[in-house]
Amino acid sequence: MIRKPASHLVVAVILALYNSLSFAVQNPDQITVFFPAFQGPGKLGLNVSTVLSLQLAQTTRRHPWPHNPEHHDFGEGMIRWSAEPLARSSVSEMMKIAQSNNLLAQIVVAGKTNRYGKDVVVELDIALPEYRRAPSSGCSGSGDIKCDQRQENFEVWQINLGDRAVEVDVPRRYFSISTIVLKPEVIQKFSTASGLTIKDARDGGHVIGETGDYLRFIEFNKHLPGAPTKIRSNGVEGYVSLPELSNEVSEFADMVGGILQVFRGDWDEAVRSFNRVLDNSKTRVPLKVDALLYRGMAKFRNGENGYPDIANAAELAPYDTTVTRYLVMASIVAGKSKDAIADILQQQSYLFVDGDKWLNQIHAWLEDR
Amino acid sequence: MRLSNIALPLLLFVYAISAWAEDRTELHLFQYGRTNTDQQNTAFLDFRDLLTENLPRLSAELSQDITIPALSHLSLKPVIDENGELLRPETRIGSLEDKRRYWLQTGALSVLTGHIRQQEDVPYVYTTFYWGELSGPYPDEMITLKLPIVGESFDSTYDSHSVATLYALAQEIKQDCENVAATAYLLSEAHKRAKAVTGDLSELGAELENMIVTAIDQLRSDCGD
Image (cartoon, rainbow over the protein chains, first blue to last red):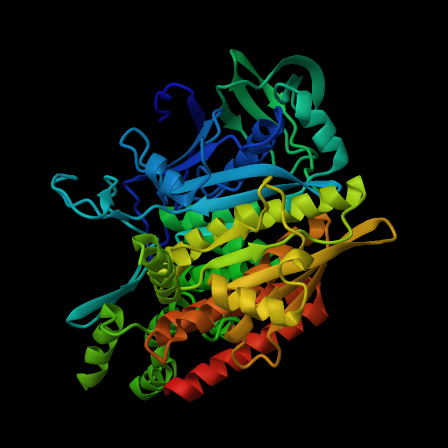
């Protein structure tokens, strides 16, 4: 299932299968994460991005294991890592490269390492380019929004209201993760090392090489010390250990991993990822709000009650338009009365621009009673 | 009368009118004080880089959700002399009256001055964020932000300066309630960031949160629900 890598791009592939009886997910599409090396002095950005891409890869699953009686199928997920950093880390550059025809990535991770005071920090930006759903005939025709061949856009939350449907998009299409403060020993080691050390055994063994421009992930052991990961790079196959980059655990892998699961319709795993994001004391409020919205939505779509999560988000961000949209959607799915929903809209109407299409749809639905 | 005698004042008049008509979007940065040692100067340069690189990042992040023309022009403008060196504030804005005049005449969104102070082994940046007539319901025409220049405070430094910037920009675009949703959007984004600061620096975060909540209350009061 591994695609032939394009030029300097490489990566690993993670397949996942899953489904639940009532909320079966059959994902026919591939979800791609584009992960270029980070900008930074020497080899620091390259090595840090390698470690974080491996951490992200470990958050996914090929199949629910050991039990998968319902044969869940989430389709294919791919992380395309590149040894070449982006020339510019602007959001427009990230979107442009992600949407190039030989990539069509749904998630882009860009970063850079910077000195700040006596420390070196890693700044991380995530972009989720917008694509329109592919019609059954494929992506022919033109439109303002690019088409990525996917038949299912699981990240868009749609609910049916009898004769009509309303939907909300992902909370944000471009956002930052908390900066990671690198440990001094990581800076020292990674500034000059040309790659991560590859050994011939999972629990140590001999050094047989270093990671290079091509990386393929083969096996993950995230619960073992050092999370030894089997990879193939520069013609060498062996294990790399993932060092702790910082004194505190970053929410990066769990947040981006959770979003990746949402794109694939793996609601169970998404909820677990967002649980860890929300339990992490490093997670800052804007991201916490997003994680609550994603988790609430994932719970609803898995047949559970996601209303409390979305109500919590509304308490944290009471003036946020996107949160208001999610709160209304949650209220509808949770069976709140139309009066209660009308009250929310009345209180929050000042947040919406005149002529907001989604708001008009909800108003029209409320009036049909 | 020579043509140049008419043309120059006319040109200045046209420039003043056009500058006045545009939204205020630039943060004017002066040289911070107490940057005499290498360590303090390096700390200031790191802080300056943070602002320079992250204002476009803030602008890009928020512009994904809403179209606010002023947001896309948000930038840090170093106020420099003929040698390209940052000007010390005393050369242009030595008094509060000078600062007010500078703010009015240049069309700056805000004027940033401050200093670096070493406390034990940690450099702290003190920024006076002057927003002139854009103070809104905040009781002063400036706010002071104090943060340590250490990696752990990078996000709070970015967030707190973003809050002050978004607050000023919200006041700038409010314009007789013509942009209520856009104003509320900027204040909402500022509110989330202020809450994030509270998690690290409770006193500063609480002050920023209170400032934003007051501004939203006033927006709703002035412009109706």
